[in-house]
Amino acid sequence: MEEERRSNLDQIEALKKDDPFIDPDHASDNAAVDTDVREQVGHDTIEAEVKDMTKRVQDIDNALRKINKNQYGYCERCKKPILEARLELIPEASFCIDCEKHLRK
Ligand SMILES: [Zn+2]
Figure: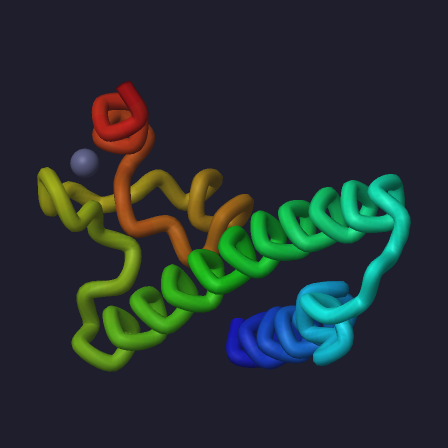
C-alpha cells in the first residue's frame, strides 16, 4: 500500500507538470481563442485528476495510520469490521459497504 501511495504522489507531480496553466507565459500570450479553450479543458481535466489522486493518497494515509493503531479493517462510522472481500478490492476503505452507501446519498 505504501508503494501505491508513492506511485500516486509521483503521478500527481507528473500531472501538475502537464497543466498548461503552469506555463508562465499563459496569462500574457495572445494565443488564439481555441488554444485558450484547449488549455482550459486540459487544466480542468488535470485538476480533477489531481484532486482524485490527492484524495486517494489521503485515504491511503488514513489506512496506514489505522494499521499503526490496530484499527485497520474497521468501519470509521459504525466501528464494525469491514468485509475482507471489500478490503481486498479497496485496501484503503474507511467505511463498510453500508456506511459507504449511506454517505454517498
Ligand atoms: Zn459502517
